[in-house]
Every structure is written in C-alpha cells, then in structure tokens.
Image (tube, rainbow, N blue to C red; front, top):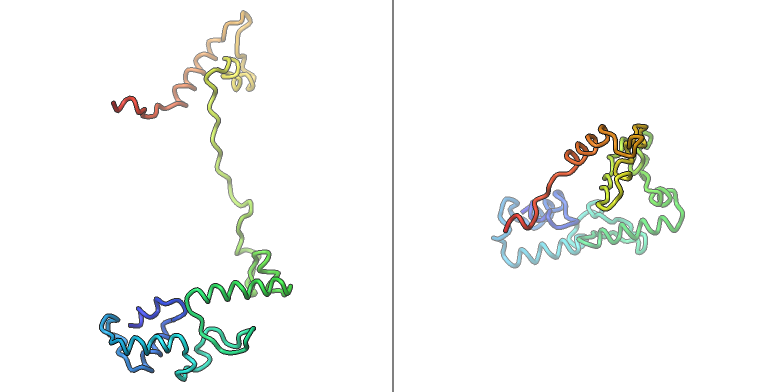
Length: 185
C-alpha cells in the first residue's frame, strides 16, 4: 500500500503512511484488495488533507503566496507552481531570481569548484577529416606532402618515387571498403 501510494507525485512515504494510519488500513495489504469505500476515502484525503485533521506541517505548499492558505499539491500542479514561483522571482529581481536567470546555485552552495557546466574544460575530441575529391588533380591529393616541405614532383615533372609510395599507403590505410548493396545479390 505505502509503495503504491508513493507512486502518486506529491505523496511521499510519510504522507502515505499517515493516510493509512488515519483510515486504519493495513499498510502491508495489496492495493488490488481495497474496497471501493476505502479507495474513495483515500482519494478524498489525498485531494483535501487539511479536512481530515492533517497537521499543516505535513502539507507541501504552506502559506501560498497568492492565496495565503495551506495546500497540498499533486501531480502536474507541483511543476506548474514551481515554474510560476521561479518566474515571479525573476521578474521581481530578487537575489534568488537573478541566480536562477544565470543558472547558478540558488541555496547558498559553494560554486568555486563544483557546479561547473558548459565551459571549456578538458580536451575536445577531434572532428572528422574531409575525404579527398575523386576528380581533384594529383597536386591537390598530394598537397599535404608538399605542404610539409617534401617535393611533390621531381625536376623533370614526373612525380618522385617517394611521393607515389606515400600516396599508395595513404589510400590503402585510409579507405576501408564498406559492404555494398550489390554484393548481397
């Protein structure tokens, strides 16, 4: 019972245990064996716990800013109310609102060594290398060797022997054949 009730957003372990104690329901009982009257009584307490003599410190929204009353929020009302509170703090320009705007810690935690995110920390991985174009002239394909200071061609205009061997090893090591769709046929 307790674990099943805590699956409802806004109902914690202690709140579920107190509901079962007030209604005198066995906490070790399975939820499927509840009578319809018991289910209705659990629903009514969850919807309005202050009506069933729950103490105000048990509720998750005490002294609401807009109404001033003690409430207990459930399901999507929790996220909606928290979002509205943060927006109200931002528009009022409070210290908490400013910290929220800049994505910093709000509750007085240290920020010198923790909470770092998005900065240039560590080493970035290398990007992809652009493949050489098929129809490019030979000088462009061997441009990397020429840029390093090695002669790309000999004085007679024929490519140097070392440049040919480097180009062959570069092509054989750099390109791996991908399985083609034709080979499956």
